[in-house]
Image (tube, rainbow, N blue to C red; front, side, top):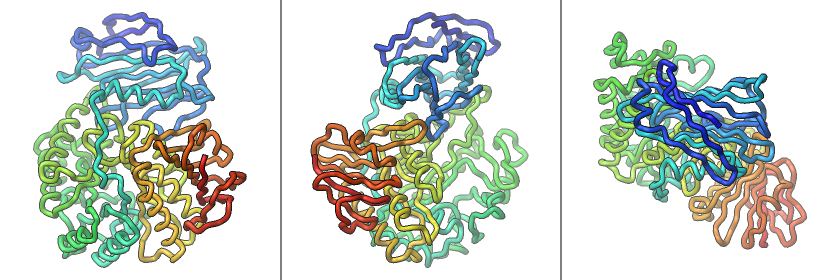
Length: 554
């Protein structure tokens, strides 16, 4: 195949010919220092891929593979969002063609167009070249592995020295206030929620958005459009939470680690800081409607000020860490690259927090749950999916395949209608076990049955924590969604089944203690000497219905 390299002005730099082999994981060539110097700031790679045995694709921008052909596929990456990687796959879930770059921190644009006449996909990949851009590798694979197993090989190329070593605290269950209360926060709600959360077995308590402004409100079609108008000073509302420091200390005395939500690059249009900088085109990237602006990390006065406020927040309130949201809203743009600037920002922000508290917990969200961010975050959360246990496990599956084993992948907080069926409450809990369970119902209003279900699955998670946290995970897709996930060590294997008839495939030749968690609509039956348990952990014979568990030995 031929790959052509061009500069910013579309003048050719050079062409490379090589023949990929199915026997190689990746066929590679290096974009050299000389290529970078000739680029004039933007380097373009162009090549064609024949459409042979391709029926789907996946990019880091997606939450699951798409089993279809698109006329145009496009996504951007930089330190703060995604990474430069695209897989094309066949219907057997094996790799057809994977294309990747090793320049994690630079702004990159993938543009892939179908050429029906030539029966191929035409790739155009643009890379922003800055003074910090290093020579990098272009990686191409036609190896017939399961498509997402190649991500393990890719991580070894881009972060070869990374060794997962996350504190136990990052794997412990989390209670979050977001869906339960939004910004309608009171000290009574926070105190009572902390008490119940600790009793149920949660060990981290996150107060989400709403702590830093006076307004009491819930998310609704009326309020969402102007939601962030009053954020940016990163001090707590003394009107809403007058004894907040006392409350934080109380929650910590219950054995809870305490985190606050923050959005470093958001600046509300009602804030003092916004009025100070709103006419400065260097300070703000854009204004999102009437609600908030996006701070440009390339403008030191404002970026440094915000960064210091967050570090001071951890120190002054004696927090155990931060939930850091919306980092991915900084554009990834080859014409105005900020990927390297963001990396320096994260170095200073996370470094400043860790200088105060070396074991601080740092929660990141889905689009920056990437190899480039493993050095900064301690937990990586699925994107927002209230009411939707199927999408929660879809998103957790993606974080698992991207980041690999021994990583604290956190579920989006579980939230359901107060009258939800017990079997579906259990399915929410089972889906969350594909990561670290997180919950966001008002704990004061849970029914006895719901509390019992939640407590059972949290206890189950803690009983098997060593396996969940440090076992080997496997995800198997059926077309565009997970069919099953397993986690195993030498003595036990736990399977989360979205298709009950895939039990034998999920456990394969494993010998030892087997536990199947049933998310499907069909029962699991016919296993000799099996013991089944109900939604809330009560013995229920030898058949596991929806939302139930079955144990057996092989």
